[in-house]
Image (cartoon, rainbow, N blue to C red):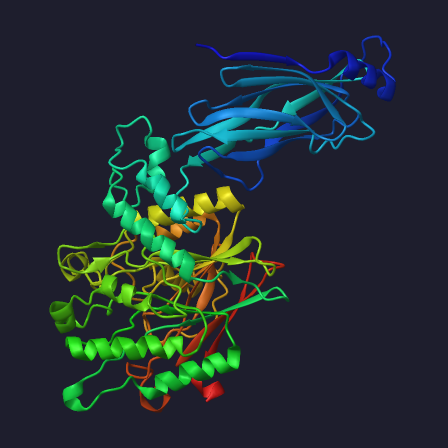
Length: 559
C-alpha cells in the first residue's frame, strides 16, 4: 500500500512573511537567470546504524537571491525507514509530501538571511536490514522575483551503508539483560534485526555462548580506564616487538634476558608514552609448562611494572612452546586470558571470532580496537586497531611458494570493515593506527617500486633501513585494500623482520616496521648485532589527527 502524507505549514502566515520581508510584487515573465547547481551531501558520513539517523544538507551554487524552491528527494525504502526535511536559516517550508520513497518540499527563502550552502537539513533513519541505499535529489525548481532560475542537479548520489549496531565499548549489565530476552531466537525470527546485535559468535542464534562473550566484554569495560589525550592535546604510543625469549631450567636459564627488561624501562623513562603496543612474537622457543608459566609471568610483569596501559598482538612464534601447549593448553587464547588479568593490560576478550585451524594453530585471537578520547574525555577522536596476523600454516603456504606464514582471514577483514563503519556512523570518521606482527605483501611492493629506476614516479618517501627482505603471508587476503577503501587507517605498523625499521607512505597509508626489542633473538650480526634494538614512537596531536609523527628510539641512544 502506498504511503502518502501532505503537510501545509502555516501557508498564509508564511506568505505574508515572505511578501513583507522580500518585497514580493508581480513581475512580467523574465528571462531565466544564470545556470547554477543544487545538490545534497552527507559530508564524510558513509554509514548509519540501524534505527539511528544520519544528517545531510542541501547546498546550492550560483543561485543566490532565489526566493522560491520546489525540491523532490528520493530515498531507498529498502534501506531507510524514513526521510525528514528541516528548514535552514532564512528558509520557511510551506508544504511537504511523501509518497513511497519520494519526499517533495516547497519552500521560500529570505535572501538577506539565508545560507545558500545549507538551505535544508535532510535526515534519514537507518532501516532494520544491513544494506546500502541511496539518497538523492531527483527534481528541483527555483525562481527569483518571478523569473525562473536555471540550474543543474549535482550528479553525486549520496550512498549510505546501514549497519546493525555491533559496537561493544558501551556494553553493560543492561546489555546482557536485553540479550537474554532474545534467548534461542534465530535468523528465521521476524525480530532478528533487533536480536542480531547480540549474536556475538555470528552463528545465527542467540545462546549461552553469546552471553558469555557479552559478560567478558562487560568485565573489560569495567576494567579498562578511558584513554585520553593530555591537557595539551598530545598522545604518545610506543611500539615494541619481537621479545622472542624463552626459559630453559635444565640449562640454568631462569630469567628473561635482562637487557630486554632494561631497554624497555629505558625507553619508557626516555619517552613517557601514554600507551605501549607489543606487536607479537612474544615467545621464542619450546618450553614445558613449568617453564612457560614462569616465562609468561616475567613477560607480563616486565610491561605491567611500567605502570602504563599496554596491549599485545600475536605473531607466528607465539605457539612455539609446543610442550606447554600439549601439557597445559597454552595457546594464544589462554595466553590472552592470562594477560587480561594484569592491572595495566588493556587487551580485551577477542572482539572478533577466534578459531583453531585443522593443524591446531589458532587464528584471529585478540582482534580489537581501543578508542582514545579528547583531552576533556568527552568524545573518542582516535583509534588503535590490533589484529592477529596468525600462526604458520606450512603445508599450503609452501605449496604455493610462500614462506609458511598464515594470512589475515577474510572474517577478520570483515570484522574491521564493519566496525570501522559502525564507529563512523556513531562518532564520525575516526582516524587510527593499526598494529599487527607480519607485514602484508604491500610492504615488498612498496619497497620494490620505490627503488625501481624504471618507475621514477613511484616515490613513497621511504625512511629507514631494510637489512632483510620482507616475509609476508603467502596470500594477499585484501586487508590493505579494505583500509584504503575505508580511509580511516593512517598507518599500519608491524614487527617480524627484526632488522628492518623502514616506513613509507603507500597511497596515503603509512606502512612500516619497528626493529625488535628482544636481545634473545637475532640482530644484525657481528659488532653491529644490537645496533637497531629499540622501539618506535608515534606522536599524535588532536589538532590534526589526519597525520602523525613517528621515529625509532634505539638502545644506543638511551643506554
